[in-house]
Image (cartoon, rainbow, N blue to C red; front, top):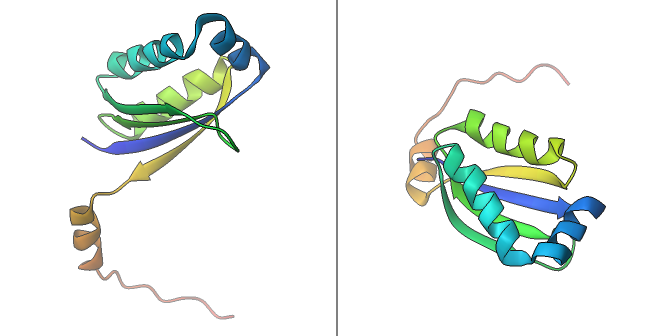
Length: 106
């Protein structure tokens, strides 16, 4: 199953929810959403800095990843960025592919 890195930055409403219910409750809510999409939560960590949460999830496909991102962002609790993760074997396979590409002038 494809893996994705979900990077979230809390909006004020999301930060208030963490302060009110705690980090474990936020992780549980996120895990429930992932399970609802027939995925699996691999890791969920809070962070200091530009982002507040880094989570690695397995999801059936990119549409499920988009649905997760849109749902969270649409609720106004966080801004979400999703990154597709590749295994070393997938990179090995990619390195063997050589598509024909002719760049245009200039």
